[in-house]
Picture 1 (cartoon, one colour):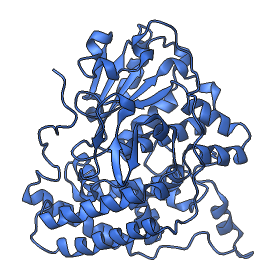
Picture 2 (cartoon, one colour; picture 1 turned 45 degrees about the vertical axis):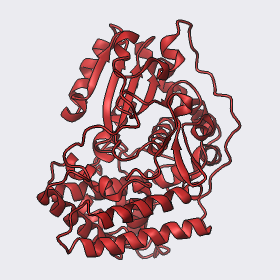
Picture 3 (cartoon, one colour; picture 1 turned 30 degrees about the vertical axis):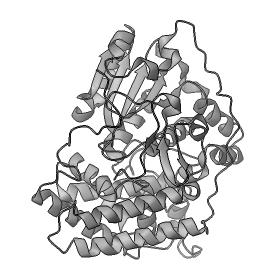
Picture 4 (cartoon, one colour; picture 1 turned 45 degrees about the horizontal axis):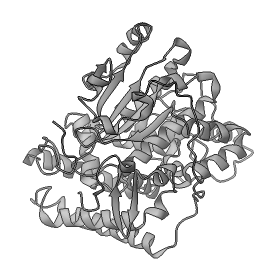
Length: 444
């Protein structure tokens, strides 16, 4: 029986409306520590010109950031990846030093803006709770996980990826290295990875076709930018109580030439370390016999929580148990051979990194300040997480974020395809006509 995506699923434990008193106290403690971090001075970046008397120290500022994209630990003793886009707008020490040493160097306002860009219009408490659940309500571990995610997002330039969007990213990559922008668009506008849905739980779905990927076809940095761009685009779909997504790996036509272990590791670490509690289900569809060898090598890399969410389907009859047939893209249901073909569309305008001055953006900043003001009061009271005034604050923040959407996020092909968009101040989830339009503006 099909699940109506407009009807929320049964309440889950550890969420905004189902918190125990102890869980509320832990949530408040995290907020207190975050507010303290947001006030810290840190060290200015870029640094002042180096002194000729201290050439060894100056060389440290010139080094490329050594935080591996798939490793949240200190990587000083491992080979440093060389990137043209990642790590170019941050102090290398923010990534290379151990977390406790690095985080105090980052100016509080930088952490503050990165955090709110990560919230991206969702209920702010819901974002914090994902980290608490991921670390089994250990406040210290959860706080460190948030801080590590913030420094990673700064290093990976996630905010820039969202603001520039696909055309802006293309322009910047072409300036960095001729051909990188073309590689980015070739990956993005093919059937290699397509956002759609919903599944039968009302979640957005990412359909990935392994047979269209060959490691040598693009720079490793490019394919990572594509992954991050798609993951951030999927944030448009998130609305309470739908916090997770479904990923379908279509393995039909897969050969060992399509295998990219570094990319697999990168995606796994993204879900485990930097986008916690985001993966709701992972379906591996039509895996050929040759995949069994690959799977034996991937299995040890899986976090137990991620592994528990993986399902295997052999054909459409099994896949429709999770996703309705009319939602499944043609490249999964039709017999004809699909080749990676660019989606025909008018390229969206490039985004900008310039600080917005529009009234809608100023209202957005004002609402964040108001939410933080109320939070400073809330953490010192006995009010529950779901008290009516706090929910109202979260709703007003969400409305402000939606009204400022065009200044926070560059336009994408997914807007043109009708996945989700803002219409007359309302955020409409349309799934390209695969499901009835759903107004998710007030879903906090």
